Amino acid sequence: MTLAANTSWQGIRNRLRSPLTPSWMLLAATVATQVRWPLHWDRFAISHAVVALGAATMFAHATAHSRPRAVASLLATSLVAWLVETVGVGTGLPFGRYRYADHVTYTMCPNTRLCSQVADATHAAITVAGVPLIVLLAWFMMGYATQIAARRIARKPWARWVWATWMLAAWDLYLDPQFILDPHLRQGWWLWADPSPHLPGVPGIPLTNYLGWLIAAALIQAVLHLTVPPSAPIRHRRWDAPTLFVLWTWMGGAVAVAWFIEQPAAAVWGALAGAPASLMLIRNQFRAARLVRDPVEPAVPAQGTR
Image (cartoon, rainbow, N blue to C red; front, top):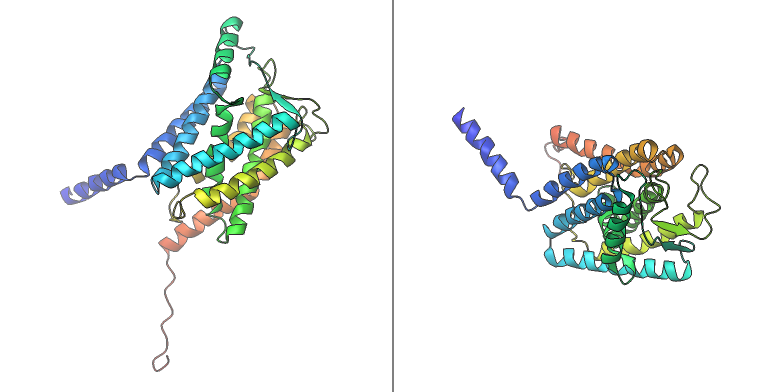
C-alpha cells in the first residue's frame, strides 16, 4: 500500500514538473473566464482577459518545445495579422470595407457612463498602430491552436495547412456574431460599410468577410507551419491544451452564440463548419487510445521463412 501511494505521488509530482503543465493551468483559467463571460456586465474587458489567457496558453505550449520558435510564432503571426488588418481597414481588402468602433458600450451595464469610460480607455490604450492588441492576440491564439490540432488530423504538410486554414476560418462564424450581433451591444466592435449579401439568418456580416478570413487564415497558417516547433504535438494517445481548446471552442461556441448571443442560425453555421475537423480529432484520439489499450500483435513469420 505504501509503495503504491509513493508511486502515485511520484506520478503527480512528475506531471506537475512537466514543461507542459503551465499550458494546462492557463487553459483551465481561460475556460473558467469564458464561462464567466456571459454573466459579466463588462463583456469588453472580460473578452480581453479571455484572449490574453488563451494566447498565453498557446505560447506556454509552444515554449515547452522551443522558446525561440515560440517567440518567432507569436511575433510572425502578430505581424502578418497586423498587416492584414491594416490593409483591410485601409482598402476594404480582403474582408470588405469596415472600421473599428470608437467605443463599445453594453446596455446591461449598471452605469452607462462607467461602461463607456471603461470601453474608451481600454480601446485607446491597447492598440498597435491602430489595430487593437486583442485582435492580434486572437489571431495567434486560435491560429496556433488550429495548427496543432491539424497535426493530429493529417500527416502531409499541405493537408495540415488546409485543415488548419479551414478550422481558423470557421471560427469566425462564431466570432463575428459574438462581437457584432450581441443583443447587449449598442453597436458592434467593428462596423461594415455594406453588410450585404450575408449568410441566411446572419445579418450584419457580409459574405466577403468570410472569404477574407479564408485568405488571412491561409497566410497565417503558412507562417505558423514554418515557425511552430516541429515536435509540438505529437503524442497522439494524449490530449494537449491547444487541441482541447479547439474542441471546446467548437462545442462551447455553438451554445454561447445560440443562447447568449441569441443567434441560432450563426450557431448552426459555425457548428457545421467546425464539425468535420472536430469529429476527426475525436475519432483519431479514441482510435489512438484503443491501439494503446489493445496493441496489435506483430505477425510471427513461419519457421524457415525469411
